[in-house]
Length: 240
Image (cartoon, rainbow, N blue to C red):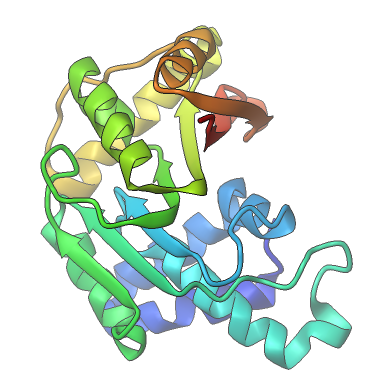
C-alpha cells in the first residue's frame, strides 16, 4: 500500500474542494491497492501521455503528482526501497460523466492545469486523444456490452504502438467475491452520481477473449484480497 505520508501529500489538495472530497481521496488512496501497484511496478513510464477513462475526482493524477513531490523530498529515507522513481507524465487527460467529481478534480489539480485536464463527458462518445497509457479502472461495467467493445476499440486506436492499456475489472466468475463487488459498485454508483443503472459484467476468460479479438497481448495481475478477491488488473499492449 501507499506510505501514509504519501497519501497525505496526494490527498491534501482536495481540502480546497471540501471535506467530503478530501476524506474520500484519503480513504480511496489508503484502501485501494491500484495506486500502489501502479507505482511499485512502474506500469506508467516517465513522460507518458495518459488517458484516464472514468477519472472520477482525479485520484490517479493526484497520486502521480503527489508521488513525484514526495519522492523529491523524501526518497532517501522514506520511498519504498524496491519501488522505481515515480513517473512524471507529459500530460493527463481525464474523462468522467459526473460533474461534481470533475469539478473536484479541477479544484484539486488546478496548479497543474497546463498538463492535466479533466472534461465532463461520456466515455462512450467523448473523443480520445493520442496516448501512451490508457487507464480504465472500475468503469467499463457501467456501460453495456456493445459500448465496452467500442470503448476498448477506440482506446486501442488512440494508443501508441508501444503503449499500454491498464484495465481493472471484476471477474464475474469469482463467486461471492464477484457478487460483493457488484453490490459495492452499485452502491457507489448511487452515492457518487445518484444513478442506479444495471452493471455489465464479464468473466476473466471473457475479458481476455475480447481483448484478444481487439489484438491486445494481455498479462493478468491479482488486484485485491479478501472481499475484493475478484478484482483483476489486465495489462494489455497492442499486439501488432
